[in-house]
Amino acid sequence: MKIGIIGAGNIGGNLTRRLTALGHDVSVANSRGPHTLTALAEETGATPVPVEEAARGAEIVVVTIPLKRVPELPSGVLDGAAEGVAVIDTGNYYPQQRDGRIAGIEDEGLTESRWTEGHLGHPVVKAFNGTYAQDILDRHRPAGAPDRMALPVAGDDEAAKAKVRALIDELGFDTVDAGGIDDSWRQQPDTPVYGLREGVDGVTKALAEASPERPAGFRG
Image 1 (cartoon, rainbow, N blue to C red):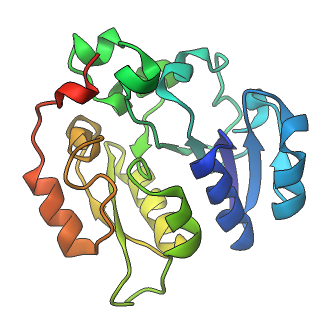
Image 2 (spheres, rainbow, N blue to C red):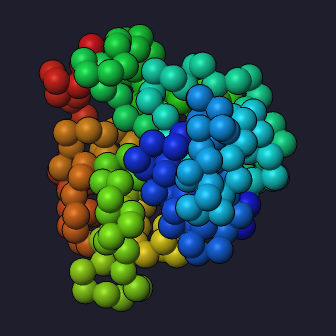
């Protein structure tokens, strides 16, 4: 499968490593340019590209950059993607530590991913936002393994969500349907499921226990 990854930090880099190892055709981009991705490309066989080209022909695009950088993405960044492209948003809102105050989230009550959708002009599927990057490399397990971790996945586009859940299964993790994008607050930072290393039952329980009130530490 052709996969584009925008962002080559901890999550983006380790997804590049695992997805290329599984035989996918991965293009990876970051804000500093393809010349800064030479080592990752040599290690993995991924193709370093400018951000504007990351989605070209891709069936899945992963956007894994700081939330405050989303509005800086080039206009039409998803142009040229395959028909029916699924866009994964791994983003989290850290107003005090990194992102500053974002009015759409604070004043309008948008979830992080709904806000991101507005800037991308395309529906997203929220996944990997509470996953430790190292776990992508170390904690994948075969289907049916008793210690297989589960990841919550939220999105409004059922076909896109199914495509993302199938990819996560291939990566070695179970998934739990966390509802639509307006429900994705259940997996935001400081919720019970965030960073949770449990299976389907534990993740399902944690999603149900989440509170819609954003903790003070995660408000601008």
